[in-house]
Image 1 (cartoon, rainbow, N blue to C red):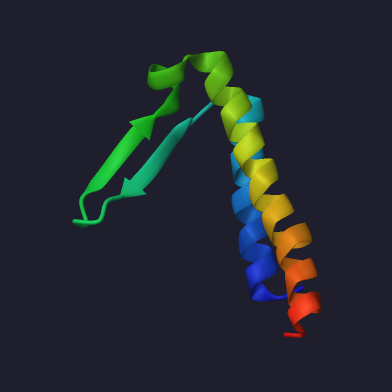
Image 2: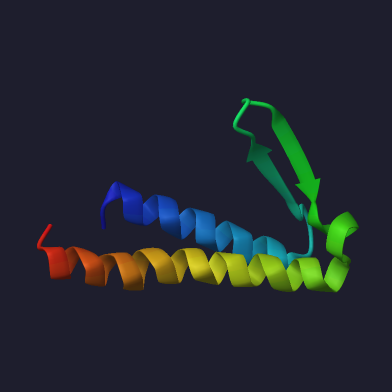
Length: 78
């Protein structure tokens, strides 16, 4: 496994784990003007939907890297 595989695995695993546990449901956002904003998904969307959203986002990160990008790399020949 390459370094990128480990980074995507850690990021996706972190999002899924936080969604399952229901803690730290916050996203750090860096704007175009380099301002740092924190979005608390629990306050914005409610506890249950925020947990579901984190689990789905984590799964999408893993699917994107391990399924879509690997197929694209083999198709292009990288």
